[in-house]
Length: 145
Image 1 (tube, one colour):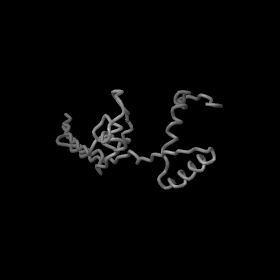
Image 2: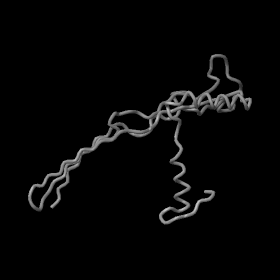
Image 3: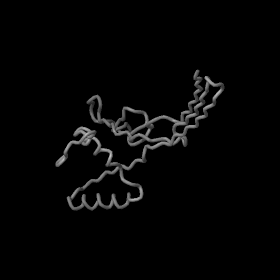
Image 4: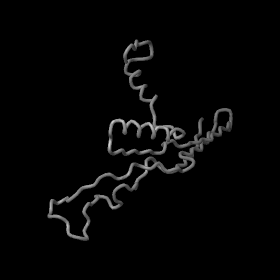
């Protein structure tokens, strides 16, 4: 925002929030370089633990086919066929990270019992959800008169 001068059609609010669209995740073509950079910086700062997460992009392809037909001079019909997430590609959610130890504040666990318990059935570090929806097909027929 430093040095920003509002102009017709561009407010300070728009300028500020537009900046977020200029940043995105790491480009998969340079992933190795980014990991090297992060690991080098962590080593310089004497970091003992480094945890990185790289997820796929959540972009999906959509397609639409439209056919307009003039039935009479005053009546027309329009057929639309839309497909969302054409490739039916799942976008995986982040892994489960909710772990609690000794939920009921009992004594130490006995041999053979679970030391940690996860409130979900799938367990720690497992991805059990997706983001978005599977392929959706929508058709419409519109009569204009």
